[in-house]
Amino acid sequence: MSTQGSRMKTPHVLVVDDEYFNFEMLSMALSDAFKFSYAESGKSCLSNAIADPPDVILLDVCMPGLDGYDTCRMLKNTPETRDIPVLMVSGLESEQEKQAGFDAGCDAYVVKPFSMQSLSEKIKNMVQIIPR
Picture: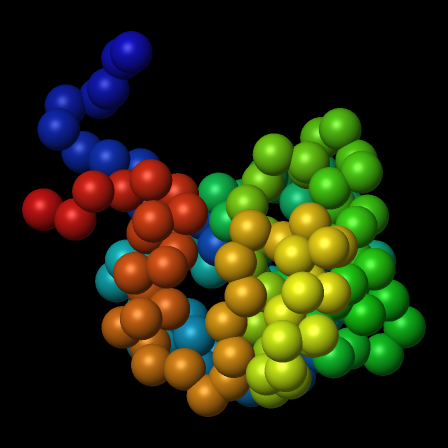
């Protein structure tokens, strides 16, 4: 395993949300730990994830057109994106909604509102970064 010096690559997080404000909030709060890119829909998520594979995808559940569940199924059934961890983010907190996320193939499900610190820890765990 080759590493360039002791520097680790900054994890790339693709935020998929129809509300650009949510992307701005996340990138401002967590830009010291992660590199962010944005997709405004499930359809653009797939093409972005293939063109520039992120280390993890933060996927909003409630979006017009392809919702988060359908987008997640699409990601997990596409060879180029199936191994990218997907963290679903939603205001829907029922056990049925969470289960629907896991049934669609997500790796984690976070309910809004969430603390930036807990979200950051979840992302770090998903990309297997050991905090030092």
